[in-house]
Image (cartoon, rainbow, N blue to C red; front, side, top):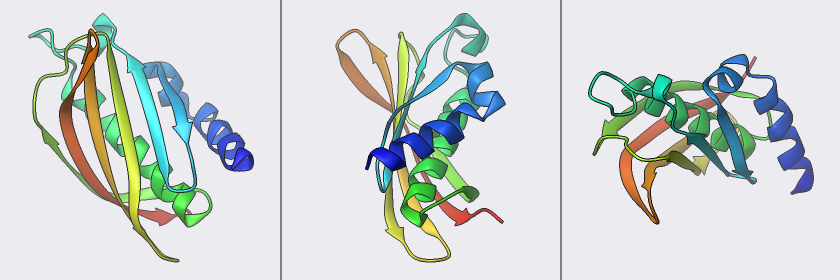
Amino acid sequence: MHDIQVFAQEVFASQPFSRFIGAELTESGPDHAELTLIIQDHHKQQHGFVHGGVISYLADNAITFAGGLALGGNALTAEFKINYLRPGVGTKLIARAQARSAGKRMAICQCEIYTVDGDSPKLCALAQGTVVPAG
């Protein structure tokens, strides 16, 4: 499992956009991944909520990591869908993705995105996607 975490951290560190936005890969395993983001003003839209694009990025990247790890290597998102359930407010966002089914050619993954304001995380969005091997 240690090798999987090292591989995942190396891939994550090589993503310029992830560094730019300030996300962190906080957990990874053979079929799951967790990303976190400390909410900053530049992540917000005009109403003071985290922009949907930021939440969508977290879902997409967490899904790709979970699926890629389940497939055993580098991967790309072929498609994904997201449902926003409540505004992203608070201090932090957490995206937890899990591969629900993985074969040789694709993995189907689900992701829950939580907004943290105080002690109790609240479900903010749900996403599902298909991940395929890169290349």
